[in-house]
Each structure stands twice: as structure tokens, then as C-alpha cells.
Length: 220
Image (cartoon, rainbow, N blue to C red; front, side):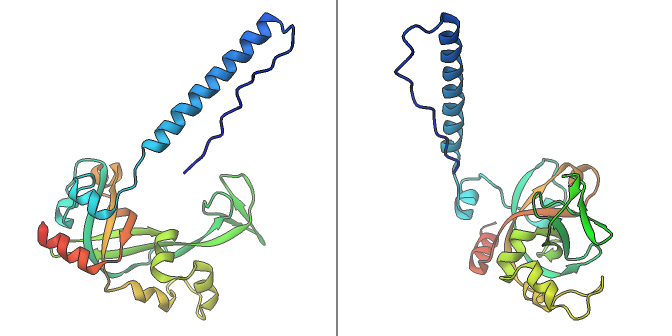
């Protein structure tokens, strides 16, 4: 939670401040306090819900895959699916700028970040596309770095360093631990999924709880 520290309320003034300086100072102080109060109120009003709460209260609906792919509303949804295989057309990881995590470009013996517009220090990060299915359909999910680290327990750098055959078609055997797992995925349906037939859905969150997944499916 972001904490904002409000400026102290000044109680001592110079004996003879000019009227214009006093008014300007008080205006700036009032504006800053109002802005900070509004930001604090917005932050404190945001709540974190569990998966059970999101589903039970209808905050984030549950959908089967065949219903998800025909969604016409940009929103997030929960699905319960089993991982089947990887889609490695775009690899399983990428070299990212350590500052802004954007993919960098190789520039001789160094790397260039197009966003920072400068030479970059780099870090290896996951970008993994996984095919998942339930009893109604099959789609591709995009897992970013934080999700894969949670599933694997190792960083992309650690797996990359352990690769013996480092070509575009190879991938670390540790990733196979993801396959055949039944998971709950919170996915985002974007404009491109609706209007451009983009078959890849971004994962916002996941839950590695097979019993929860099974119970949710039974309820729906």
C-alpha cells in the first residue's frame, strides 16, 4: 500500500509576510492536502478479494473456454483448465531491460532499450505461451515472469544457464512440471481477442488448487 506523507501544518509565520506570498502559500498547501487526501481515500477503498470471494460475489465471473472465446465484453474472467503443451513459436523467455522490463535489442556486444533509448543492463525474464483445455475448448494463455516463477520456483536466468543445447527449439526440462496441471486462471479478454481473433489470452493471476478447480466446475 502506498503511503503518502502530508506536509506539516505550518503554525509559525514571519512577523510581516507579504499578503501575496501568504495567499500563494496557503493555496499550494490546501491543494496538496486535498490531492493527497483524495489519493489516500482511493487507495484505502481498494480491496483485495480471494478467488472464492470474487466468484461467490460475482466480482469476476467464471466461464468455460467455449463461452470465453465468444465473449464480447472486455473484462477479466476465471477459468478452470488443464495445461496441455507449450506454444514455443515465440520462445519461452526474453532479454529485458533491468529498468523498465521491455524487450531489448542486441547491439554488438551490448543491449539497447528502445523505451529508455539507451544502452541497458539486462535480465532474463519468462514469456511463456501455454495451451490449456477444459471439457469445452482449447486456448492459448500467456504467462509472464511472475506467474512462471511461482509455478517453477526458479528464475528464467537459472534455467537458461542450465541449458546445454541453447537453440530456438529447446527449452528447459523444468518447464515440463507445468504440463498436465489443473489450475484456475484469471484471464483478461481484450479488444484484440474480441475483434481481431487474437487467440492468446493474458493471465492476470492463477491458483494451483485442484480441489477448488473441481468444486468450481461442479457448481457451474
